[in-house]
Length: 298
Image 1 (cartoon, rainbow, N blue to C red):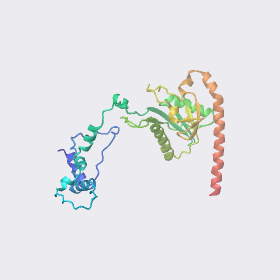
Image 2 (cartoon, rainbow, N blue to C red; image 1 turned 60 degrees about the vertical axis):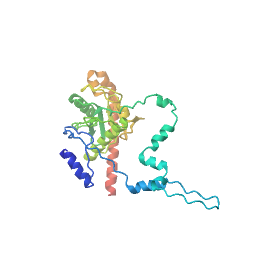
Image 3 (cartoon, helix red, strand yellow; image 1 turned 90 degrees about the horizontal axis):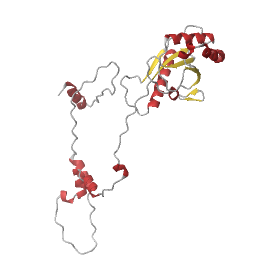
Image 4 (tube, rainbow, N blue to C red; image 1 turned 90 degrees about the vertical axis):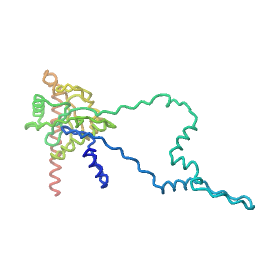
């Protein structure tokens, strides 16, 4: 018996539940492998067996005539018990009932049951940056240095971000290297992304108002890793210009990687950037008025 099994026995004897890791974390040592002893089922106490016999015992017969009857011979307690109770205790009642049932071929029994394959989590990567704690910028895959510089130039031209671009965060789903089976991959991915954004907002004090998405929302290939990503429009749950997953209105622009190829794409983007800059200033003025009203109320 190994040391781990001995430790488990001591914990069970003291009434302490032993917990083991369900998944292997990244860079973690594997769990020690040992032969576990199968627990033997506890025998049924005599009191419970007697109670089962009493519950299943036949009811006494009523006398229908006034004639005296000869006393019946005494029999042992085992004979009084009904055969069904004895068979139930011996585990034979179910087998006898199965033997009595006629064999009827059903369509479900004729076709072999096919076990459903376990669902795998969706895989995708996102680059995230927040502008002054108000507007969240997302892009599929990992944002390159050239794309970061291009994004900063576009935002400065629109009058949105006049300073240097904040640090870009990288989000990968699933978080664990050894991806485990899940019940609903789409819901798990949405909850994971929402938890990541909510945790970042809580740590850094963001008050998000809008989501800026650069690129396509359908299934696409990451230009850096070459891996196909899950359809991000389903993960963001975009409906009528609103991301239901993040509860933010969504603005969509072209992929940053496609802008340096020619001047036509930049020329087509410029009216949308001007409108976005005006929206930035309008929402910023509204935030300043709200903050002044709150300070006066305090």
